[in-house]
Figure (tube, rainbow, N blue to C red):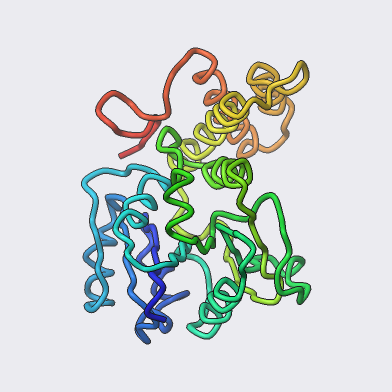
Length: 275
């Protein structure tokens, strides 16, 4: 697969990446680039030890999923690039099958994706869709660079939705390959903690408000203030403390957007970072 570059964004992900994709990476199916987002658990060093033949780029700060993915995409010189979450299970044959669908598609497609949920694995080779999961996205590199890559105002969440919307607006299609299945172990890309969970919730709320405002989706009943109200209400009525904290984090992120705050601080660090 000389026409493919595999890009993986890691944050405290050495263990799960090695478990899920270790055999695939060791088989060296294609050029691979791992972008480590300043993992405080030493993931970059661990990944270099596990995969000495793979380029691991260790960043000096956590710049978010989309920004890190963009670094990999800008370094890509092959016609195709496959962006994968560390907690995906995919063999070299699975990747080869997905790439084969893209190679045979002459309809102006810019993004292809495998099924990452069993309910989507219905056997249909190519289906035009409006959105695919950011956990596994195969790009036509030339087209996606013209579209503009991931929005670097976003730290986390909604970046793939925004890119999908811009891809369709640019006149390109997005295809879901339902006959290719990558098993996604959702939420296991990094070890959770209350502080990280709060940060994720905060950025989910912020990013939802940012995207709907940027792309003109606001209405009387769908806007940042209404998002904040819904999140805030859930934070008050949820019976479980964990859920109350999740909704509070989303409400806080939405409130920050309404106040005009950005996802990153002045020094480039993400808001609410516990590190």
